[in-house]
Length: 416
Figure 1 (cartoon, helix red, strand yellow):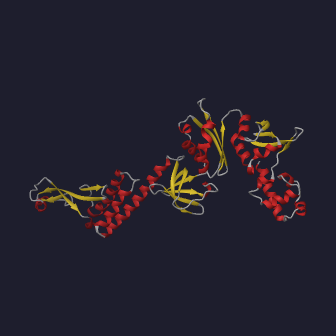
Figure 2 (spheres, helix red, strand yellow; figure 1 turned 180 degrees about the vertical axis):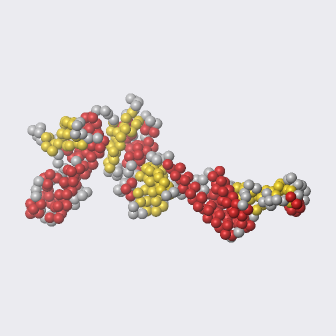
Figure 3 (tube, helix red, strand yellow; figure 1 turned 60 degrees about the horizontal axis):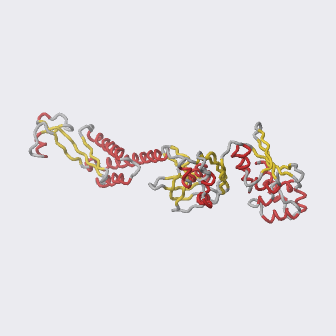
């Protein structure tokens, strides 16, 4: 190996944007001082000059000129005769500077230095990546998809640093191809066994909050504050906002003219339906806003049990519950109470809520729902009221299918 091979390694420093110049120089000096120490024992009389712009370096051996018979240590002293062979007008008391060629260290030593350098640089790069991202948790980052795996996606930022987007942090309908640019929020940054792990997310509430910051100037400027966010990523979200300026309508500002501001966020979140809700400290009013567009007749609040009973007209129940019960689940999380929905009959008496079978279209095949409707079962509780044997007898459904349907319907009421 000649000196150019090692210099090539050093020249790579020019491309390393993560490592600052003083750190580069210190690493190179440390590597070569180790080489010098192994060969000469002492290093105080050697000067290492690093040119980080060009990616090269020079080593100079500095020695004091003494009389020929007074040379006690050839590492720090040189006789006048030898010195004058370097330059004729040298005199006793002056210093000589001789350039040390890398080849003089030997092939094995240079190879070891190259390996040490690569290891030190790798550790430094990892430290710099960790420092770069550890204070950016909660920020949005755009990165390019490099590799798609079953459980996660590997992305690269503009400097080639590796970022991870786990499957659990992706919206269900997310589908990315190699080379595609993806926007995410930095959820977590940690160091494991000396390697930085930057975990990204598209399902975290912070992602929606930051998207609103970007799309709504009033949120970015602090005129509108996001008080709370609850999400079923890719399906529905509820965002509570408040304005400290009476002249600003927080809901209207977030939605924009004809939905111009919110539409961009909805597209980014794969058509996630976003409800913007005006903040209030009145719990009853907040429940009404959280269950919109359903119109509530009355509300009973049990503070001790943390439960709220809401009473609605029969045609408002499905609106309050929402598709697959998402609306009422989010509303419950938003107010911090379990919400029970009851329908009022024509005499004004309440009935515990039911769910229309059509709300389960994503989980139960359409022809099965039609079979149940043929025998007058158009809601979940009307199906649960019948035994498996009766359902088998009255429909063309198999017993196994009926058991699966029952599990789906029962789980919905258990969740509530």
